[in-house]
Amino acid sequence: MLSLTWAILSALTLSVSAGNKIWDGSFNPFTTATDFDKWDWSTPVGTYQWYIHGSQSTSRYLAVSSDYKNPAMSSEQRGLKLTIDGTSNWNGQTLERTELIPQTSSNLGSGNLFYHFSVKRSSTNPPDSTLEHQVCFFESHFTELKYGVGSNPTSLTWMISGAEQWNIPFDANTWFNFAYDIDFSAGTVGLWASTGSDPLKKVVQNRSAPTSTNSADWHLGVLRIVTNQTPEDWYFSGVYVENGPITTAIGSGGSPPSSSPPASTSPSTTQPTTTQAPTTTTAGPTQTQWGQCGGVGWTGPTVCASPFTCTPVSPPYYSQCI
Image (cartoon, rainbow, N blue to C red; front, top):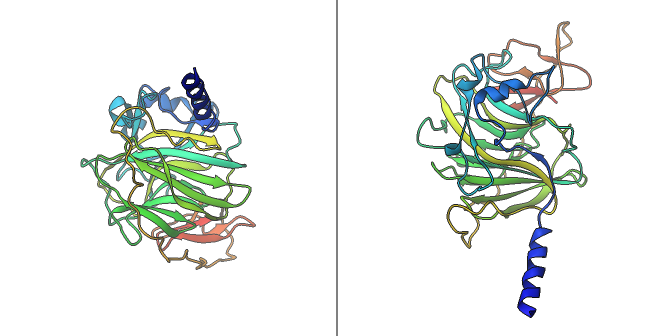
């Protein structure tokens, strides 16, 4: 009887150890790529906004299948394969982008929230480590993953405001699980990570960051700096946002949890650039907040609407109104 009581108490403890999911980015509702096309500005249906992509059909950039999910996530039916290639220039930009944004009325920018996602690459159409990639980022870039930059270009590198904090080799056919630990009230962000089916472990304690979001400016996807014709495939699974405490379990499938955290490196001392793009008072169109305002090959507006400033995000290729 005593053992049964302890079992019940343990189960109750586990049941309350996880947070409350406030936005679910699972791909279960999407049976084909055309399901993403049901969303538009006049009919904002579904869980994702789908407008940052190239000029071709959605099926060129997005695909859903059970083969594309993390096998450890038993509750998921499908994962996402996301492609960028030489047609992925969006809205006249010189950059290549395929990105999804939450479609939600939930407040995704207050309190202590955890932005969960898993990402993988394969040996087919792998990312080019000689080019900078921005992965799963906010418009202001206060935190994001990058690939092709930093002290280890072949690693996934986690950054705060452009400064390298932690990285892990981006090996093929391995699922990398992440949660951005964002305390919007305190203005801090930390990182949880694991691989495969291993539970998340905190790999970077929360550090100061200019945390802010309008609840619809987190980009699930990839921005590749510099136009390149070579296609790249990225895979995503396990996408959701919850409030605390964090859910560390990945799922019931796959390999058993390991006893050690994922490999990492010491935080880099690299500091974010503070160079300001030159401003001008020349009459002409102005760019809105978060829009591109400069970079190699950019021919659009270079002046930001007040009170925003054209700021290099990935110099010399990309500047943004912040």
